[in-house]
Amino acid sequence: MQKTILTYGLLAGITIAVSMTLGGLAASGDGFMVPEWVGYLLMLVAMSFIFIGVKRYRDGELGGAIGFAPAFKLGLGIALVASLIYVASWELYLAQTDYSFAQDYIDGAIASLEASGASAADVAAKRAEMEGAMANYGNPLYRLPITFLEIFPVGLVVSLVTALILRNARAVPAHTE
Image (tube, rainbow, N blue to C red; front, side, top):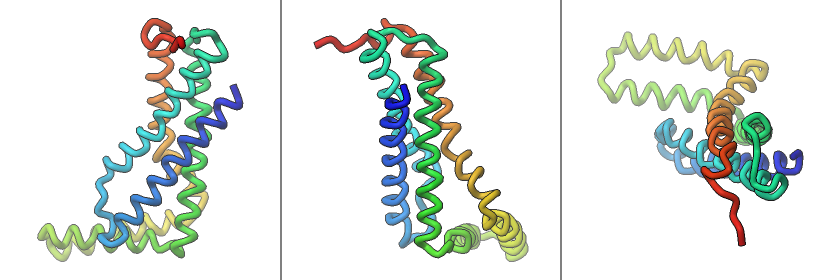
């Protein structure tokens, strides 16, 4: 089970790290214009390795049958490894960009707010609010759990759905060659 967790957790983590890097490169010219839903869609795609890993483990190691609890546990393990890789990748990205994310994010959000025609008072209030939040973000004891909580709930949901589906061997039968 540990080999499956590490293998598919690494695959999911590397997938999200690469897509995060490519997404950051694509957005770097326009600030942060990549919609948030695109990021979560990429996380969902990466977390599909949970389903693949649990199914392969069920079919290869368990003869095509797995209970809900073992499937869920396996899925959570994969999600944990992938989430830790995501956090490490984000920290590496921040270090590589000299931690400019906070100011770039604020500048992009303020530019969007100004472009929408917001009043100067609303813009100033939003800037002050965001600068306060980003001051907290500079603390790794705050940032690391926040970053982890961006992705782990996606893995939690995928693990739950995977366990519900794969506990029934007839729902997705084992592949026979």
